[in-house]
Image (cartoon, rainbow, N blue to C red; front, side, top):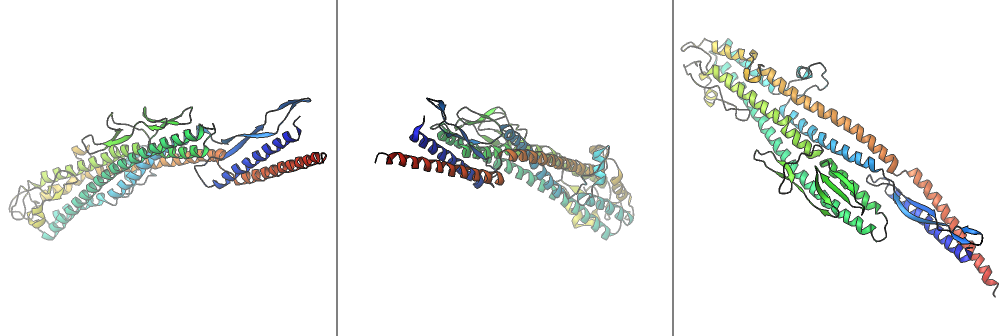
Length: 476
């Protein structure tokens, strides 16, 4: 049998166990608004039994561990979904900026069998499209009165406005490309810092858990938060080692092993000014496939590169076709052989400085000494409706509408993917919250329950103390 002193030990263990349960409930309540925290609970089990005259006899209860309530599968799913969300968010942000730069608003709710054409038709043109239309309207106006200096001045002014718009769009797209390169540099720095943090937490976890064999729940919470921040940037794979550390790999390359950062990532310029990713110092370019860095690479080298190239092709075709007709005409003073536009692409297109200074030099006649002749002006005006071979047999306006439609569809896809991601992520987070989240009602109930158990254990010890006093009084 336990005897009075054995019973006192039983009461003491009960008191300590209930006290620990109260402390853990308090820890849960303190972290109720901490999104990285997973609720904990004390695992209580029957203390080892003793064999007595009447058979095995219980010795009370003991706390054996503080358990963290987590679902590892949900954590991995959330990490993967964060990588997907980072990928599409990076694209969405860059495409929205590009749309603002171009100055067009595309109705992304357009429907139809030919979606590209539908979006192009549904687009509300507010930028370069109007400037293109106004240029050819100016050609038509000057064709009506080819000898009018006022109409010629309006023409060169409109042409210069169009050229400036091309220049601005090209410059801003180049600036956006530079910003995306800077974002890659910043992102790699964040990745490398998170790798250092995770390795340090691995070390802290091992040091905390090895001496007594417990689980460093709070450190593991912090590490999981760092892993999720890292997953949003790059789609890392993680594996839990027997000693409690996490191994982190990316595209088959181990970045963190045990308590050390074994590799880092960096940006490098392959020679075209478009930064790429690789492991530190060597190795082929990394293709993460998901995460903010992958989304930045894809949008820069995909839709935005196509947009920039298409605008250059449109400007080059406009320069070439207008100059081809214009240089064969004559001005009011028989000036001939001059180009209307200078430059070669969207960044360099400009109106011939000589024509800006002297609009009389604009070639609108197909013969000298005929100021009322408008055949060249009409040919220039008719360019608006002619399919251009360099633009895949589209007119200038159709080619530009296609450019805007492609940008709009890329943004529409990014918006749709982000909406899907938010739905999935919210679902996963709600599921994790239902498992790992702290419930105020539940914790308050537990707190009262453990408090009552503590009081009962204290009452047991008080009773045993009185019994001991009775036994001692027999000796007096």
